[in-house]
Length: 212
Image (cartoon, rainbow, N blue to C red):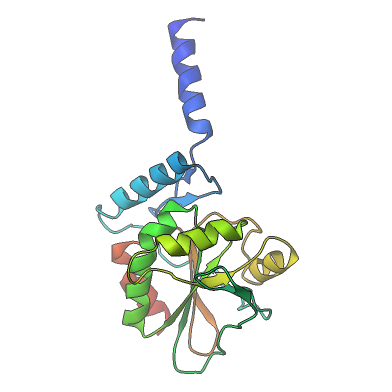
């Protein structure tokens, strides 16, 4: 095998297991399921570095929200000890917007953006609900135990299967979506902004404008 062929083979092989998907329009990368520690660390480092750059030039919100709707069924709720219950999300009260953030314990960019999502939601006067799509409940429970002060200590959980598929279908999301993704609703339950990819420091203005 010639030198050029060897170089090409190495380049192709090095990209096969990359868990980070390039974003579109300047958005941060999204991550597909990969539970390895190395993959998660790589994804986290990549997205963390992106936050030090200028705000993305592309739009934050996907404007094609027609047909996306808040699901009628309720996901399970998991507390910090791993106990599963059927505690439903509160009904929209007509006063506070709602930010639904989809994450998984293996998703590096999701972990990195948690404080930012919480801060943005607070500034918007919105309730924020984190929804996990982890397949392994033990992994999700371990994640709660590793969270710092102010981190996620419990969340809603879409267990793999028909309930998850139906829930995500209501929002026109893939059954195995790249993460993170965000659905932001006004106080009456109408979706105003859908974000594919990690939230950036410079995104607040557009998200806030979508709720006006």
